[in-house]
Amino acid sequence: MSWDADVTVVGAGAAGLSLAVELAKPLPGKRTAPRVVVVEAPPGPLRSPARTWCYWEADAGPYDGLLAASWNQLRVYAPDGAVIDRPLGPLRYKMLRSDRFEAAMAERLDAYGVDVRRTAVESTHDAGGEALVRGRDASGAPSVLRSGLVFDSRPLRQLPAARTTLLQHFLGWFVRTAEPAFDPGAAILMDFRLPQPSRGLAFGYVLPLSRYEALVEYTEFSRAALYEAAYESALRHYCESVLGLGDYTVQGREQGVIPMSDGLFPRRAGRRVFFIGAAGGATRPSTGYTFAAIQRQSRHLAGAVRAGRSPARVPAVHGRRARAMDAVLLRALDTGRVAGGPFFAHLFSSVPAEKVLRFLDGETSPLEDLGIGLRTPVAPMLRSLLELPLLPRSVPAAGPGHR
Image (tube, rainbow, N blue to C red; front, side):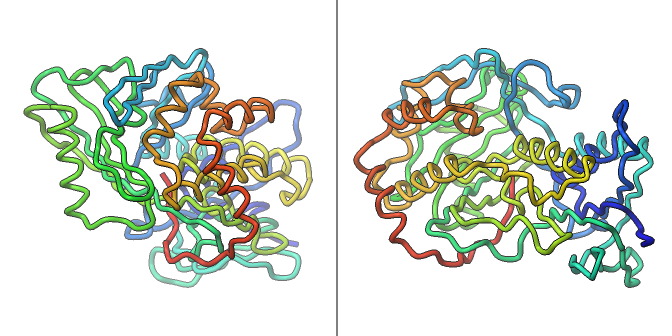
């Protein structure tokens, strides 16, 4: 059968580019890499604006040369103002800007001879013994791509039915101050010195780039997003009244909404069409972090394709135990049984930050998970656990996105 490609990757964001590079890169002693075509949206509203991704890993990593900054210490401010400084041991918390990553991955794909096409994709589906990607090219003319497999990273039109769906919604400013105001040695992961919603939580987030520059965000976990003016007011209050930045200028901004859902994300749309990235369940429900999971997902899927195995046999990027614990936490926060600020502050003050981050990556053992669980409010968490099987799943109104 004559295909345009062995594999078509739809979308040129973190998930699409990461998988395409893993599929196309030459490996010594291995058979020829599959023919890959990447389909990216034409310039316009289908393209995502530049954004920031954060993740953690030990020692050096494959994208270190692209980082905006990194830190080996995290800081958390409890609601009462107590400072919790935690070294990360062998880990580093890393900040990567999407525009720099995308440019570097585009260069690699060009070096590997990968065909990148600009098409507004309208559908991906099976058709007999092949998979089709239908859309319109930059001129508006219809186009059809035929391949053996399709990996689709476009956001889902509808989130899966869930027992609990919260939104992580945020506004961030890249600020520059007139006087030194930031500690470039530590990233502020959560600052709870802010008014809290009745259910969920709100916190500040600061990624210092120098003593004068930082990305400063106001973030909420709650059921509904805010009006634009509310974000502006909350972030201004955080910068001026909490951080005391003094004279500062806003040099850029980021805004987003990330669903935090215990729904079961579909991993495929047919025998030959698979979802990747946030659409394929890569976002960790309890935190919204996605980038590191995308890297694991890409390596595993590319390994399966190269070995001639079905991608359907690749395990979900987040295991059942991790998803179950996330479901309990989301329920406890949504019901108001657990106050988010004290919960996370106590977690970071009583458990080494390295272990907390490994827990968030799903890399802790069941015994370690139990030890961490015993440092949470046991009674409300247990009540949330016991009632989960009795709760119906419903389709949320929120649309998907990712950080």
